[in-house]
Amino acid sequence: MPARILDGVAIARHIYASLVPRIAALKLRGVHPGLAALQIGDNAASRIYVRNKVRACTEVGIYSEAHHLDADCSEAAVLKTLEKLNRNPQLHGVIVQLPLPPGLNAQRLLQTVDMDKDVDGFNWANLGALVDARKGLVPCTPLGVMAILDDAGIAIEGRHAVVIGRSPSVGKSIALLLINRGATVTVCHSKTRDLVNHAARADILIAAAGRAGLVTVDMVKPGAAVIDVGINRLADGKLAGDVAFAAASEQAGWITPVPGGVGPMTVAMLIANTVTAAERIADAPKLPAAV
Figure (cartoon, helix red, strand yellow):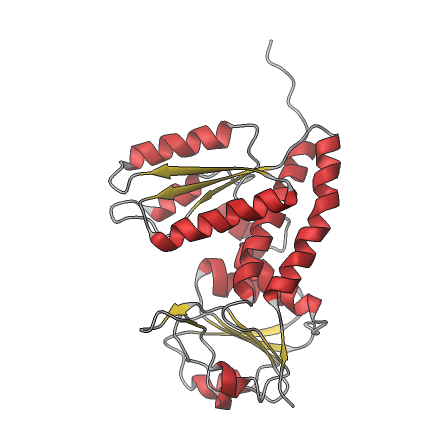
């Protein structure tokens, strides 16, 4: 029996609908959630991503700003812009759109974003909170993966999950979220020996390596949930995931497509993180005024 296709577009719509009353409650308190996206350079894909994020903000009633700096700008100029965004009380979320032009230190700039406004979840303080299973702002793609699993009613506790990919903001973060939910997790990567057999034992298989067609049908346990995080541009311009979708969908129990799976959920969770950040900032104890 073919796998059930997990529709990220439809799940994202449910997420947006669930945010509307939370946004309305904040506005009744005089808080209008706001998100700023900073793009540096003229990467065409980045322009599309920023536009999609701004559109999503508009759809749910969040204030948004899109900022742009030239590719040849100095790191000092970027830091000055981020400092201004951090201080702006209208903004509850600040993101730096990746990739950055050569010559800019991505880690230094990402760590400059106020941890309370770090709705991408890239600040080391937020990543550290995830390690310790404490409240923080979690990277959006891993949050989206978990939301897809939950929406489908896929059991996590006690299951064996295999994550292919070990980047801090995706593979490692997904692994930590699964561990925090009671899964037994194996993390595989480019140095892993016998990847096929590791993957084939997974009840939940997460492919986040960035290699088109890496996961073949012999790596899919019958009935497994297969979540494809990969987005790869093929020679003909089409997008493909890390999973050989047609064959794998005949063996898996659940599977996400590319496009239309994890991608829309990443944007939805960015908006959700912005609302969460606004709620936390609004609820934070106010310091007494200086005298």
